[in-house]
Length: 74
Ligand code: SF4
Ligand code: SF4
Image (tube, rainbow, N blue to C red; front, side, top):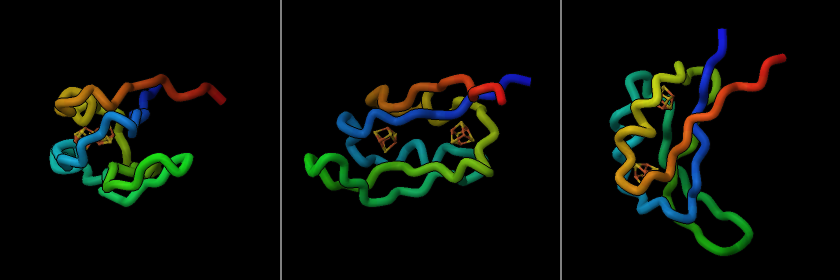
């Protein structure tokens, strides 16, 4: 069965933590992220083993940082 997982566009993240609070299985942790030396701020990091692909984080994010993508079929 196809499953989805969230992908994050961290450059637009405002570190509000709404996604982490909304996740029903608590698989998002706010962690300091540095990418290409451009920014360092708390952003959500996902525990892949725990995510159930429910899309709630993507719906709740006020900045449209989160996009749900289909998992690759192995
Ligand atoms: S898709 Fe659902 S389970 Fe996965 S990180 Fe988002 S809120 Fe959590
Ligand atoms: S809800 Fe969106 S803007 Fe807020 S911390 Fe999560 S990804 Fe960043």
